[in-house]
Image 1 (cartoon, rainbow, N blue to C red):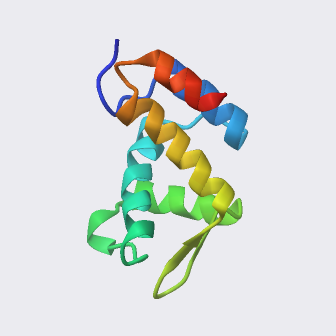
Image 2 (cartoon, rainbow, N blue to C red):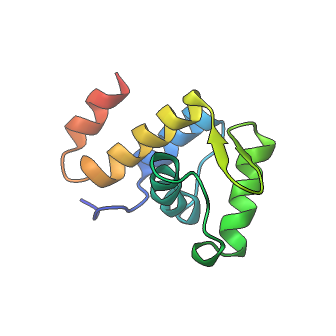
Length: 105
């Protein structure tokens, strides 16, 4: 069993199904912050992201998952659902794999 927030083979596989590629740990760790941003002020704090994070945000923009303007960020419903499922797998059901499998059904 892995710990909370760790990228597992199951999460990598599910990200490949949902996004078309396997995410890495850096991208996975950015997802909770972006989820928080979307539920609150919809603004990315430049002090809380680094170059790697910015590259990931650009990748998400290029894929049409998010739009980042100078004042706020927007997200597609489909991408919201994807990150919620992936975060559920590693942050909520990390110690109960059967729960993560139910979420995929």
